[in-house]
Amino acid sequence: MTYEEARNYFKEKDLAILPIGSVEQHGKQNPLGTDYLIAYRLALEAAKKTEIITLPPIPFGISSHHRHFPGTIYISEAHFKDYVRDVCLSLKRHGVRKILVINGHGGNLCSLMSLARELKREGLLVIIFQWWTIPELAQYFKESERGHAAAMETSLVAFLYPDLVNLEKAVDEQPRSILGNLPVYFPGDTKDYTVSGVFGV
Figure (cartoon, helix red, strand yellow):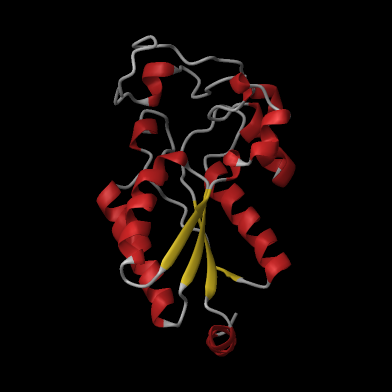
């Protein structure tokens, strides 16, 4: 898209799609970019069907809990929020008033929700979508298959990017329980729960 094409688009529409993900381990079978690759492909498919512009993906996210695995790239929550805010406000300057964020990484959610509330006060509506929350997916995958880098996520990335997945390296590892069923939050890192980085089958 050229700037002239962008100008014509923004004259007609006030919506944009922003895919966001992370670069972090996804088990031995999936690429490090799984989260942003999925988010970007879903954004492109949505853009085709709706003729709404999609931005290039923001690949890096809040992934410090995966830092013990080689290749994980993470940024602080403050920098992440500031970066996404600047992107959204740039869009607002061009006339965008509604942004659909396709978030591919659960670790980004709290910061995105906080930012969405802040931007709403500035006249910008930010809606956040996460593919794994689609209710219909539950009928195809057991609870143990819906975790990080488990069957559900691996199946999707294998469908979208078959050349990037090596299913022979997939493992079945259920996360360790650290505090049992206590109703508390424990700020653990991924290595505290799993050796392979996989949460489930």
